[in-house]
Image 1 (cartoon, rainbow, N blue to C red):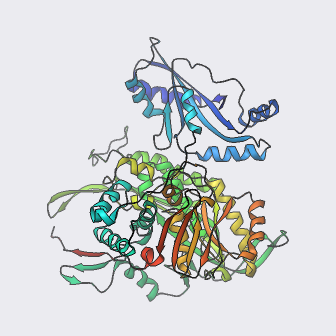
Image 2 (cartoon, rainbow, N blue to C red):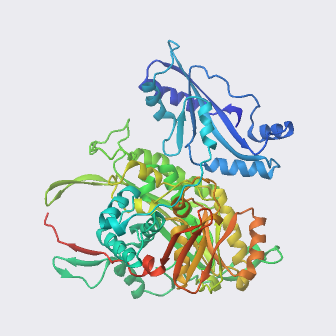
Image 3 (cartoon, helix red, strand yellow):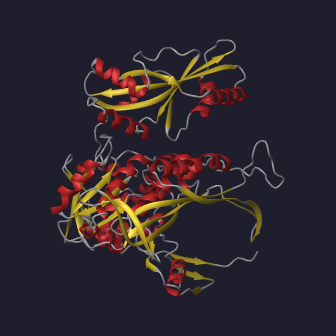
Length: 623
């Protein structure tokens, strides 16, 4: 591992602000110094010309990081993860000719000086550490040698199984808790019965995939539930009520409730300026450009880590727009936040009081200081304006049937929305015939966001803290832009668009997106796990298949159009991989060439067709 010293990390203003906060925790702190430090992993030793180019790119110097004044506290990306900054910096280095560079990471070395010159104790380091690092996405180290852990390479770990044949329901209940699956009692019974009928035990990959595909986040089980209210069976559910608005007023609605975004009719033609699909020459096309619209929430991740939570919320909504029909163009966004009372330190309000919050959820103030910036940053870096939004606070004790009850938004509402444009011939996805090639477009698999769909479906505070932190994603808007450019090249071909069908990768990762893509065509598929682009070779099959690495899409492309699609991806420097193929039989198979087994081998109906429907039997309360 090569270490390079960089420039000062914090501005004078930020340094003074941090010093003031540190002195409030530890009055003996006298000065704080900060400096960027770069860590480079290479295939071979770099020659002097490579060193010079690397220093020019990073504004660094080839002298190893020296001993910091005072106590060293080194903040680096969370050990075991790859930061978005690293992905971009490494890519730039390779494009610049540094082919030997495998990966670049960046940290900040802090030197903490005290009035008496003493070295900080472990307890003091921990107290100050909360001020300089975010444990969600960063690790706090105390020697430069510890940074070697950034590049540790574990060997692949095998698939695990849950013994329901011998252990029965109890074994699955334990797995549900350990894996954070958020399965209902009915779903546990359903899975035990299903795998008992198949006469084999489920793998952790199959269980995690089922949990994501059938989570509240992905399947809206409460909104689609049957309801009994005060003993009377209701003939309409919540989602039916929502759909009823379109049923009563269908004019102008071209697509709703079944795709990644809805499409409404444009009243007039519009002049669209884009490159010709085959010649690449820019020109103006006058055509009806319909409008795709979408709003969704990203509450759970924003409660845990507001900046990446809101950022990836916007990123997911942008992908939903781009993955509408057979490809569309995101154009403008909105972001909204509803939180509990802010409790501003220097501006208390008479109606506010500290009612406490779960330890793993950040404060309403932190959400509003970091979340809007995260959302705006992703939009800005992707290249889409965030034009509007809203902000509300509410926290109040209200009467209930059992006395006073606290109502508020400790777990916030974070709304990500936007609109885009779609060509008329691309509004509907096509059915994928057998032998259609299944593609993952975008960045590699990384151990981030594991189990996010299920985690967001659990009441805040009911899951383990480790699972909550594992379920938050990290965004890379520049990679998402590359993907969108490829999608743009496809829809710009008009009737010759090679995309048969596509989905964005969100909750549940490709374990949800790929089966959903295939299920839309009422087909089955076979996949090869080791063809999935992967930046962390030590990941287990469940981690590769179910992680929620962002900025990915899944597509169906005819075999005879692959060469054309490959050319588009190479032009945009957008990674892609053929990971499977559509089959006639309604079975889902995932093969693992490394361990020579099949982590997934189930009928599609087990995943999508027959899971139990939720029944909500409730009684009205008198306040």
